[in-house]
Length: 312
Image (cartoon, rainbow, N blue to C red; front, top):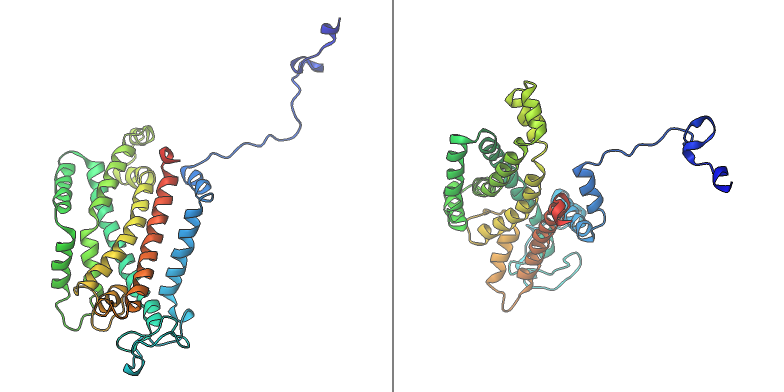
């Protein structure tokens, strides 16, 4: 009798299942970007990199927030003096405020790095997208050209090209270094973009859009590009740090920024002349350069790991 008195949910009065009252909330579909952001918020490395990058960008945009000193105001009477007043890092061999020069040096280094990365990104996007989408002969020609560019020694080509582009004695070298780095650093991005486009164009949603009569431009910019751009953007984040270091390398070798331009690479080159007796004019710009490059690389690594489900 006890079993007969037991009523299940499906046997509720009226023969209707016992369901909760009110509207049922549906979970929103999760996107790749949403999953990546949820993963990034839990990473301490990501937030450390974000803070460092934000400080450097503010320093480059508004250096007067960090110092009121003029980096060009040098006096030999202050040569190698220690930290006094606003000169937190002391003075160099020309009597210039090291702290002020380090702060103002961020602007040229960041400007060259960002512009060179944007140029490399545009070139890499065009080559990679064209090779991956059209395939066949176009892919073969563009891929062989990319392989040829990858075979060119980066440092040697950078020295030759930058020296040639900055032959004007009145030039400060910013345009020359930016163009040099942009023309030499796009190849890896093109290969990454090509692989992503080949993978995306073989998906079912692209085939369905093609069967519905979507033109090539709509297929590329509406369906293929949005679903293959994530890895390319991550690579550009890493490339930005590399280009900042490359600008410092060219400036250190004397073929980068010049004619009064302030750069961490120039400061390091000047500081090496007296590094044994007075190391601080070399140490401080090297620390800021290393921290900046490391911040962008850490940011790129964190974003890459978040967007790659296999690495989570």
